[in-house]
Amino acid sequence: MRTNPFKFGKIVYDKHFYNREKELRKIISTLSSGNNIALYAPRRYGKSSLIAKALNDLEKEGYVCVHFDFMSVYSQKSFIENYSRKILKSQKKSDVKTVISRFTTFVKSIKPAVSFDQSGNPEFSLAFMENMDKEESLIDVINLPEALADDHNKYIIAFDEFQEITKLNGENVEKLL
Image: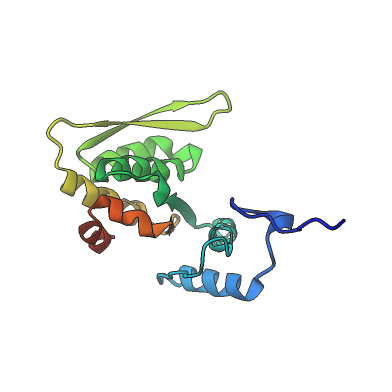
């Protein structure tokens, strides 16, 4: 009896990644040129796995890549918190102190703190300032990758399950992104 060689329902890597070299090259070329790209296809066609593979390859080329899944978002505040953590976690361990400093320079209403797990990986917590302006914080966090970028750190952000943005009063947030 033959088994299905394809895995679905989660992001796949390595031997389970169906070889879509032409699409992969196009995505990498488009993103590394500083352009945006949107992928449309029915569910379970491997879009997330394709993007994950592209981001992995781009990280090897020196890009800072952030894969953000909108399924984790249920409000503007949860977006601000989860997206901030993703940006902070994307930093190199040696840059943590600098990143925290730069983060607080660009995002005034959130104070990050860092601790390290048993493996030495940074874990970030965020404290929101009293009377924070959510709209201003949202704009600051959305602009954070651009603010942190420099000659050595070029950012590529992938938003997965983007249709879930409607949870955030969609039109306004979508325009900001």
